Amino acid sequence: MPHPLATSSSEEMGPALTPSPDLLLPRSIADKDLSLPNGTPVDTSSPASSSSLLNRLQLDDDLDGETRDLFVTVDDPKKHVCTMETYITYRVTTKTTRAEFDLPEYSVRRRYQDFDWLRNKLEESQPTHLIPPLPEKFVVKGVVDRFSEEFVETRRKALDKFLKRITDHPVLSFNEHFNVFLTAKDLNAYKKQGMALLSKMGESVKYVTGGYKLRSRPLEFAAIGEYLDTFSLKLGTIDRIAQRIIKEQLEYLVELREYGPVYSTWGGLEVELSEPLEGVSACIGNCCTALEELSEDMTEDFLPVLREYILYSESMKNVLKKRDQVQAEYEAKLEAVALKKEDRPKVPTDVEKCQDRVECFNADLKADMERWQNNKRQDFRQLLMGMADKNIQYYEKCLTAWESIIPLLQDKPETK
Image 1 (cartoon, rainbow, N blue to C red):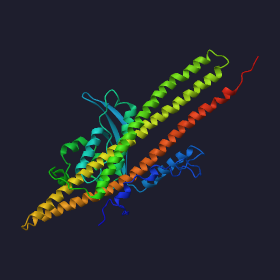
Image 2 (tube, rainbow, N blue to C red; image 1 turned 90 degrees about the vertical axis):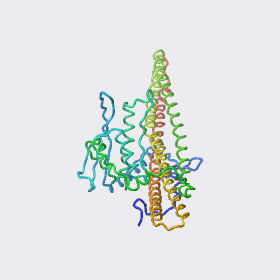
Image 3 (cartoon, rainbow, N blue to C red; image 1 turned 180 degrees about the vertical axis):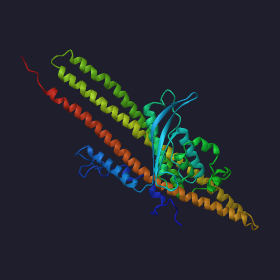
Image 4 (cartoon, one colour; image 1 turned 90 degrees about the horizontal axis):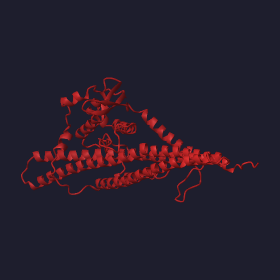
C-alpha cells in the first residue's frame, strides 16, 4: 500500500538533496541572446520583466489553491494591556469544506503561546513528521521593540506562514489539536481538560530511552543529515552578511540625508546656481527614499525567509534524530533476540512492531523531505526574483532621479 504522503515519483533522495539549478538561474527573465560572463541570460528590455515572472509564480499558487479545501489566515493583531502582562493577539480565520469541521467558517483570536502550544502538540502526536518552525519567541530587549508595528507585522506574517504550512500538509492538517486550535473559542479550557492524547507512535517515541546507540545511518539518511548541516551553515552565512549589508545601507542613508540639504543651503547663497543645486538636493532626496524602501524590503521580506529555513533545517534534524533513536532501539532488540537461544514468541513480535515504527519513520521522513525540498525551491525562487526586482526598482529610481537633473546642469545662464 503506498504511503499517504508519497508522490508518484519514485526518485531516490540523492538528487533531491542537490540544490536545484533554478535557484541560481533566472529562467524566464527574457528571451534575449545577451548573457552575463557566466552565461546567465539577462533582460535589457525592461525591469518589469522580473515583476511579470513574480506574477506568474503567484498565478501558479492561485491555480493550486483551487484544489484546496482548507484556508487559514492570520491578521488583525491587537495589543492587550493587563495588570500582570502586555501581549499581542492575532485573528485566525478559517474557511473550509471539510466534514471534520461543524461550520464552514471560524474566527478566533490567538496569542503567540497558543501557536507554541499547537506546535508542541503536533510534535508529540506526529513525531514522524516534520513540523514547521515558529518565529523565535524571545527578542533582545532594548534592540527590538516587540510591540512595534514593524515587529508585530513581521511576526504576523511568520505565524500566517506557519499555519499555511500545516494547512497544506496532508497529515498535519487533519490533526485533532489543529482542529481545536482553529475552532475553539476558549483554547485555555481545552488545554486544562488534558485531552491531548498521544498516538501509539507518539507513545513509542516519547518513551524511547537514550540508552540505544545507532551503529550507522542508512546512506540516504546520512546524505540528508549532511545536506541539512551544509544548508543551514550556508544560510547562516548569508543571513549574517545580509544583516551587515542592511546595517551599512542604513548608515549610508543617514549620511545621504545630511548630504542633500547641504546643496539646498548652498543654493540659497548662489543665485545663478540655485536651480541646479536645488535639483541635486531633490535628486539625493529621491535616492534616499528609494534606498529606504530597499532596506525595508530586505528587512521585512528577505531576512525572515532565511531565518525560517534555518529553523526549518533544525526541525528536520530533530526528526532525523528521532528516527535514529527508533532504528537504534530496533537494532538493539534484534541483537538481543539473536543472542537468546530459547524460543520466545513475544520478543519477535516486539521486534516486528519496532521494525514497523522504523519503516513508518523512514516513509514519513522521506515524504516530508521531498515536500520540503519542493517548497524550498519555490520559496527561494520567488525570494530571489523578488530581491532582483526590488534592486532593479531601486537602481531605476536612482537613475531616473539623476537623469532628471541633467537638463538643469546643461542649461547655460543668460549673460547680461
